[in-house]
Length: 195
Image (cartoon, rainbow, N blue to C red):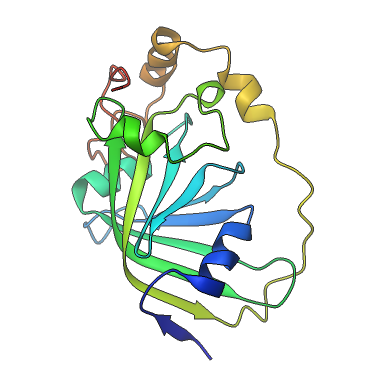
């Protein structure tokens, strides 16, 4: 039932762009390391850059496992599920990179996200993923669920922060500068944004 796609375009692209939620999965190289799986939401924080490249905004949170794993080995899988309409699951298996705020590419990449204001969310990095394998599967067991709206809690929480207070918040968290397994995570202090 599953199909492999050469690129992210047409109906596949429309499906991905219509989903209000997706998941990311990463893991360290160590066989006994911690696998990380994260939900990602907030309309406008995900874009398709070209037929094989996607990106999403990495906002403030209580850990930085994805950044740490990408810094170590680059492996990442993104997954979208149809919770409404015809059943479908799409996975993009690829190589990812955390483009940090002081990277010269950061400003141009950020301009690709015109439908969201990243400032109230404590933007840490932009995750760019180059697809190596794009597949779908049936999704017959995925339940119907209705999307109502994005929560405003994240923006309300992090809108109070400037770079100095965000750094202080991150430095208090055990798993920001390093991962659960001790891999280098988000460089602190948080670099200023490149323009």
